[in-house]
Length: 87
Image (cartoon, rainbow, N blue to C red; front, side, top):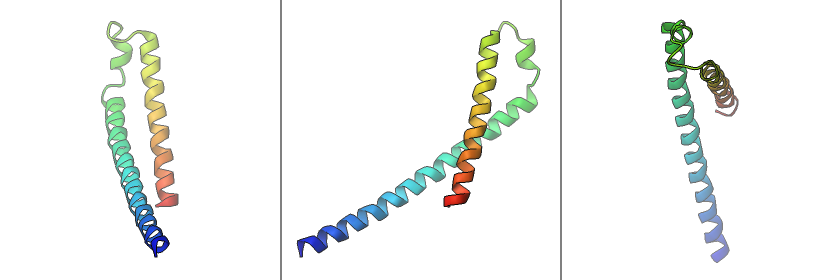
């Protein structure tokens, strides 16, 4: 009898963990979508700002910012593909 109760409890726990994991993935994708929108807006509305504001960003900082934005966009695309495949 104890084994059956433990199996039922562990099955319920697995179900709950699966739901929580799905919620985390969904929230992460939504956050990445929002971040992607912000990046796209920044890149469209201020494309020349970074190159003309020499005092604001050092060349290495501009490069790092551009690389970070590219990485975030790739992470977004990867997360979206995983959601399509597993969702």
